Length: 147
Image (cartoon, rainbow, N blue to C red; front, top):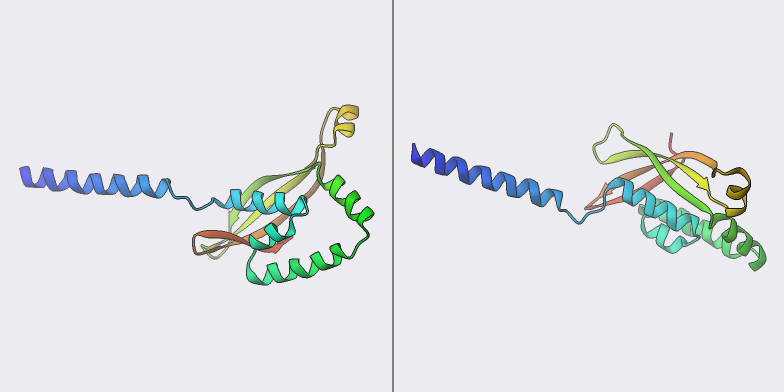
């Protein structure tokens, strides 16, 4: 009987330790990965945003960056100023058919101080979604505006 209690105690300790260590994982959560990508993208930090994508989407994003970089500096400055007031908010995350693929629904809110002062509220600009996939220990953005 004493052996059973000792064995049970050992199994319980190992199980509790495994659960605790799994909860302390350093890998980012899907919501954190999606928010970090959106923040980088909105702040025109396309190199960082591309690093958070799958290889295919990263290549597409890098091609788009070439078009952005070809714009006159004055236009780029206006775009960056307007996007600096935008903040992403993850609304929901849903699992698709695959365990390693999620659809993230998000809202982009514009917090322009001049607009907020006049109306008292932030302006909701975009409701959209993206899809993220688990690659190793990381969640990578695989598609934008995914339905």
